Image (cartoon, rainbow, N blue to C red; front, side):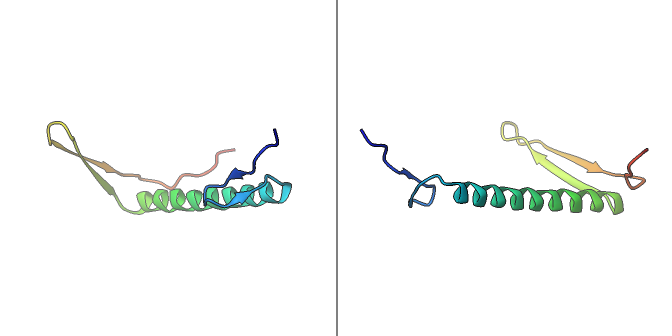
Length: 78
């Protein structure tokens, strides 16, 4: 029995080729770079001003508030 082409997540029939694999790896690398940029921006903001996070319990409805503060910028120690 011949193998059928697998459905890609967009519903298109695709075959797994080296070009497709390279393209998917490039897209994953770009997404990881975007995540890294977001985390870096949040860390820089925490260094400059406090961030307040409020979490509400879905069970009791109580709200807990957390404040993130920093006094110095992180650096690489040698």
